[in-house]
Amino acid sequence: MNTASLQAFNTFGVDAQCSNLIKIYSEQDIYDTLLTYGAPYKVIGGGSNILLAGNIDATVLINEIKGIQVVDEDEKHVLVTVGGGENWHNLVLWSISHNLSGLQNLSLIPGSVGAAPIQNIGAYGVEQSQCFHSLRAISLTTGLTKVYYKEDCKFGYRDSIFKKVDAGKYIVTHVTYMLSKEVDINVSYGAIRTELTNRNIEMPTLKQISDVICDIRVSKLPDPLVVGNAGSFFKNPVVAEEVYESLLEKYPEIVAFPFGDLMKLSAGWLIDRAGWKGHSQNGAAVYKNHALVLVNDGTTSGGDIWQLAMDIQADVKAKYGVEIMPEVNVWG
Ligand SMILES: Cc1cc2nc3c(=O)[nH]c(=O)nc-3n(C[C@H](O)[C@H](O)[C@H](O)COP(=O)(O)OP(=O)(O)OC[C@H]3O[C@@H](n4cnc5c(N)ncnc54)[C@H](O)[C@@H]3O)c2cc1C
Image (cartoon, rainbow, N blue to C red; front, side):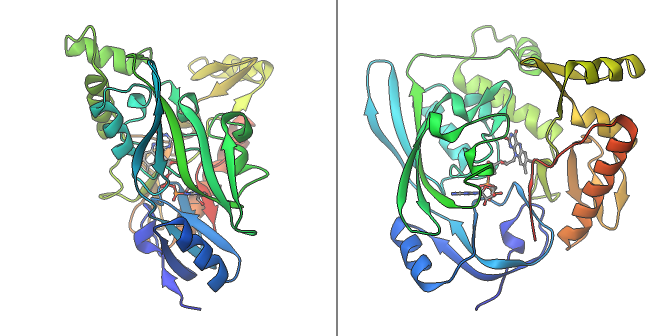
């Protein structure tokens, strides 16, 4: 065992030890690791969606498999296969520079390509599932390779099969996206439309949409390089229409969106209304500009951040009868 610190490998910047830390540059590196080190294994890409609440009794594989390759195309589409360790925003920039549409609304989401399907990343009215074609993964128990097509992944809101029955079982080595040669834009999200209007842009290019989204994100979210965080800590809870109606009676200003036959409540609104925005305890805090984002306010222990999250969770449940669940993967 060669214990190693994971402090440099999570965007909360908290310290935790793991049993072994191995950087993976190829599929061969994975086979070698599985033969050399015993289970259990954990996979980290950019570490921007994990909270290390304690030490990790596992061999941690850091995915560094790179590469962006066009593997097929027709008149309308291009299939692009990307190494799981490639930076997500680099892929978005690559697609824009090749005038391929589909990923531009997902600009500046931190992390790796291999992690994008795990929680089906989404932003500004778009989810990666809309362009997803397939992925290649290696089982961490058998070492066998498996290809998952879109329907196999069971994508949902911040969800996939990799957060359910296949959670923790595979390392995603490559993801293939189908990008469009026709400019296909979605600027229905209010903040994008407003900002494009402010800039007098009527027919935006992919680059202009990406620039607007990057600017909005930078103005709203803390930069993990400056303030440790993992973006939205909680998922927006989805409730039955009757639950929403009774909350609406009590709180006419509640923020919610239709979600099929159900309603998705704004977790940020619930937390803010419960009085947590800006609250700090033991070096963990709720970001002053965004109640959904928990930040590292000087602690080195992920346990302090997890304690704050649990306190918020219990308070929201007591006040509104609604359970908010972490979007972030909590380990240790
Ligand atoms: C400032 C900020 C803003 C954010 N905004 C958004 C947003 O708008 N929308 C959104 O959806 N998310 C957002 N996130 C969350 C995060 O960027 C995404 O979840 C991203 O996909 C995480 O990538 P990662 O490589 O950092 O994953 P990690 O944090 O390294 O891992 C996350 C999970 O995926 C697993 N995993 C990682 N790589 C692999 C792999 N190759 N194979 C198998 N499992 C793997 C890990 O084991 C872990 O369970 C934000 C985060 C931050 C810090």
